Amino acid sequence: QVQLVESGGGLVQAGDSLRLSCAASGRTFSRYAMGWFRQAPGKEREFVTAISWTGGITYYADSLKGRFTISRDNAKNTVYLQMNSLKPEDTAVYYCAAARAVTAQTMGVTDEYDYWGQGTQVTVSS
Image (cartoon, rainbow, N blue to C red; front, side):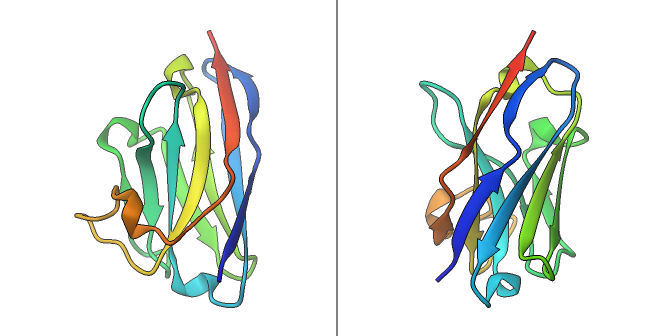
C-alpha cells in the first residue's frame, strides 16, 4: 500500500516557476514508477510525466518537454515536478500516481497507476 500526498501548488504569474512535491508513505516506494498527471476544469485528466523506480528513465508529454522536469529521491520517498516558464494553460489540479511499472506505451494510461494522491491546485495568471 502506498499513500501519496502532493504539495507545492499555488497561484503564480505567467513565466514563473513552481516545484511540486509528492510524498509517499510505505516501504516499497522505491519499487514504484511515479507519474504526474493534471486535470483542468472541464477537461480529462492528462499525462504530464513519469519516472522509473530507479529514476534512470523519464517520460514526458511532448508538449511539456523542456519546461517540466521530474525527479525522485527514494531516500526521502518523494517525487518532484519542477515546472518552469509556466503558462495560463498549465492551470490545473496536479496529481501524482504510483505504478508497478510503466513503459513508453503505458506511461499515459491512468489505469496503469495503482495509487493516486488527492491533487494540488496550480493556477497561473496571465
